[in-house]
Image (tube, rainbow, N blue to C red; front, side):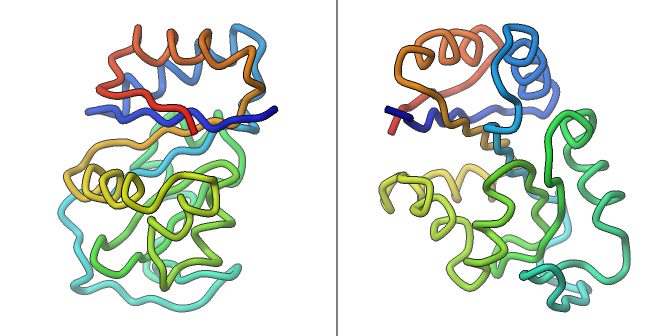
Length: 164
């Protein structure tokens, strides 16, 4: 049975190293989702429109924003894009969660995480971490792979690793 592993990283570099090691171990990067906040933007001065199912910044292309926020992760993962989330500002997301966040834009990050099977209370804590500038890393995997993935995440500096 598939479960979701969620980790919080203080910086993008460690999250990127973890994603690369997971890929090198033969796991599917298509199952990885990353969420990061654009630092210092907030909601001020952002022109938002609906595009591809969710609000995005009109001033800069999705690829430039997500590439700047996610660095090498944007190239490693599918579906990288940016959106404006009320109360968080510009958020870059990559992987399966991108579509969930676009569909749950009014519910914010918590709504997208709940759709991944994460309890609402934990989703609120993760949103707080993202607001503080941390990187949320999640990955769907079969139960027999969870320990290996969690080990890679911890060895690359994940602050917390939880399974749902």
